[in-house]
Length: 252
Length: 280
Image (cartoon, rainbow over all chains, first blue to last red; front, side):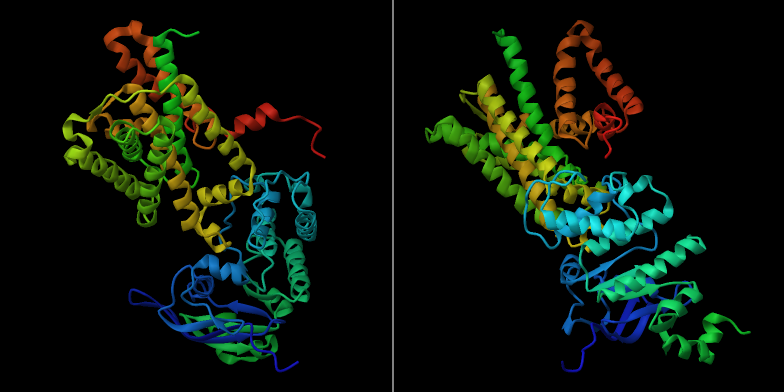
């Protein structure tokens, strides 16, 4: 195999909100095997970068390449169909759908069949039902499959979001603060889960404030501040970087 | 079987159910329309012109009226559904009034005098259309389309980021609603035997929306009940004479207070059909 090309590449990506520069000439690239941690203080532009990658709003300047092709300017649903799935900082689930239906909904992206579909008792195609079960068991929420997503506890709702995203069979998964509000045990589980997802050859970008988690799981870290990239490197390099310490990790 | 008075009320009930569903369909994706009297007028006028001036049989005239209303719905939907909430409401209102004024000024359609002499709408014919529409709605509510519609209703941005072409879906249900309104309009014209631009006022559109909101906007069954309440209560309360309107208004307010999500809700179905111990 020839030299692997980056799965995602940001080339001088800039986002201007009427004079406020939220993201400033950001260059970044990552490989399929990467778990990239995006860190930085609140308002640094991390979530904006997610919104630009998923097409929520257009880039002001620059280009985003996904698997070698430019995706900036495409509609969000086209980008999703291309293989990018995400979760949200403030959990955003569909209150009319059960946990199981969230996964089914995610799976639709890859099935053209308009066949009538029943409930968790399994009347869809066999492979889809197996796939849904596998995802829900992987996330430990199979037992809640018939519950309405909004009625679950916070930590479980986060898992439903991840389940919906995984059901889309993404090649790149964007996790926006997946462990926010979780206790230590839950965080550990999410960390383990991210490693397993990465082993399935899905690239991950994670926005995270818990530095221990980031240092533990990420292969690469990008530090943003005021929309600019301050530092980039392996966890070891970041913890040794003086500017990174100053901006984010605090002086010790 | 029925007196002609009773038959007339049942025909209007059937037409109102179709009109309610014409608003319910866009509502499944969270789009409120108060312009559906416009689509109804298109169906009514086009079908009447076909039967009166071109000697068409009633059934094909109804279908063509519906299809043309639907085509206009798709064309309107593409630009209009970029609007949301109250802005879309205003745009649909303007559309309904626009259609009414076009017919008012178009001599081919009789201008202010309207058209008269249409006939042929029967009770069975109306309920064949109601039945077919109900079958379609039931199929829809059991297909994967339901999940897509619900996802857009709940959070259209997330739905889009999860791979749904929301513009296509929204325009689709809007056009399907216009089809039902057009068919209902054609049935209405050939029952009333007389139509004029004043038959299709915004008030009629508002009533269609009320069937949906009061009946329950998350279920096609709710619309049937909403249409039934609004069609039958005014008839049954004739004894109240001049206070009929007051009673009707009070009923609407009371329903909104006690059943803000509509008379028929999905929770109600869940409660009625929940069987303990059937969870595994």
